[in-house]
Length: 96
Image 1 (spheres, one colour):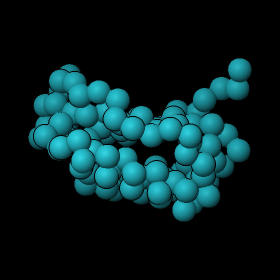
Image 2 (cartoon, one colour; image 1 turned 90 degrees about the vertical axis):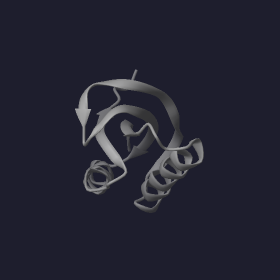
Image 3 (cartoon, one colour; image 1 turned 180 degrees about the vertical axis):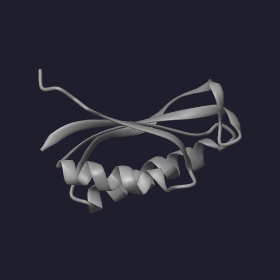
Image 4 (cartoon, one colour; image 1 turned 135 degrees about the vertical axis):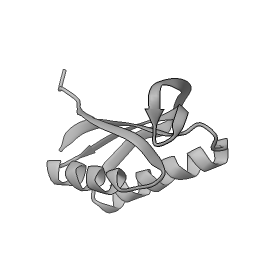
């Protein structure tokens, strides 16, 4: 198993409950795929450098998880086609 960090942006006009629901949904998807989520939650809301899908502000959500490369690939595929997510990056964390 490898360690990953998924950092994704959702619209800033969502309520805290909606942001939590989105974070929990992706946590559940990761666990259904066989991954282990260590941490998931709202990071911060910021003004975006440029407009993304019609939004100038975004809320960042950080999810730390462990899984195989196949899990990471499938999670990324599903997140990329989701309407909730404006932008997504998944990072492979180096072992220290």
